[in-house]
Length: 85
Image (cartoon, rainbow, N blue to C red; front, side, top):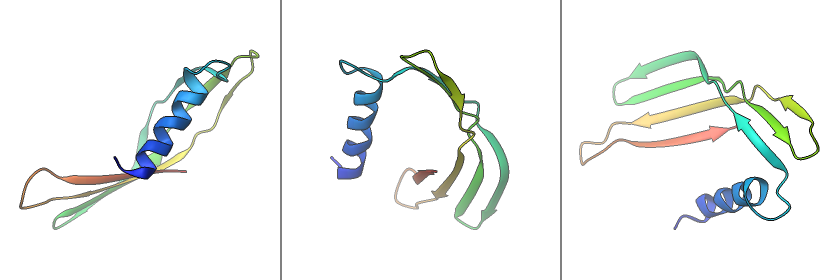
């Protein structure tokens, strides 16, 4: 398995489901701000509108930025990457 993918999964488990996890719930309502397509490449960016509720009752919104890049592959399904800031 990809090392970075495993790091993200481990972090999610620690925050959401492990004993003494910190986050009770979260939600996201993504909004695309800009989308462009050039030949076999598509780019999209916008805001996540993400909100969190913690174990101690605090809640907050981050409104994180996100960017998605999609490549059309002649050899099979599209390959995409997601960055989240």
